[in-house]
Image (tube, rainbow, N blue to C red; front, top):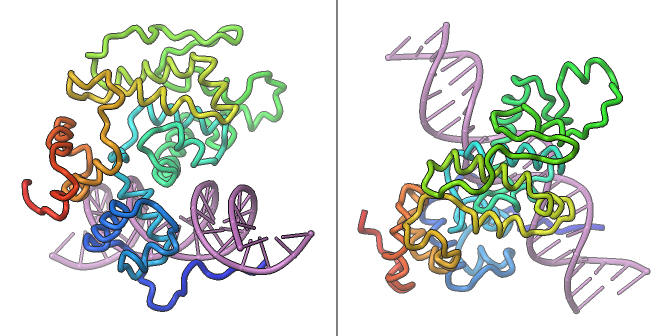
Length: 272
DNA sequence: AATAGTGACAACCGCAGAGTA
DNA sequence: ATACTCTGCGGTTGTCACTAT
């Protein structure tokens, strides 16, 4: 079946996006929403192909993205999910709110892969490397099960198919975030229904993670999952944030942002 | 100071599947 | 049923920054 190229290659710009192009794309999506990517460049006045616009938006401009390195807990979750799902980055990414498949894929290739090899674990099969060398030892444990054993520092112990976490999700929310995230992961891994839903391709984990998100945030909003502004609202401050990364801003900036309306975003370049 | 090597991440490419006329 | 479009996915490449020599 013949396919047209996604765009006519002539006159289409490639390579890194400029701030100006970003702004055009954000403005367009903010105004019109995400629709028909093929039409976006023309309508937004961009000399890019639609695919490139979509990628730029989903991987970089989307206001709900987290920036920065994956945390220990996120990394651990990626490893665990990879053991179960393989290179299905989009599926893995869907379990990590604010992370993109591209980001996870990159992180896997540059960090995790090497880390696992260093630890003597095959990053593809998640089997111990030396074990693989010594042939098909008729082990009964799945790669995933293998993985949740002392591969890491998490104190997750598995006995007779029951995963026990040393400390369950009863910890105080005031603890430091990496510790909390470890506990978060432990509680996810020890929650059979959540892990089952991962297998069954359902999506509650995303919501669960959002609800359980332990990112330090303003006390009065901590337990309110609705405190996150809509993406339209997020876009409002994106212009301000994008050059620095969302997490260079305190969450309390949401209040300011929410109070400023879409017209004010418009193209304010000040207030740094 | 110059150069090579490496790491990190953004962006591109081609393919496949879903949707639609 | 078929042809076609659009979107999403995974693999790969390109580019820039940093470090080692």
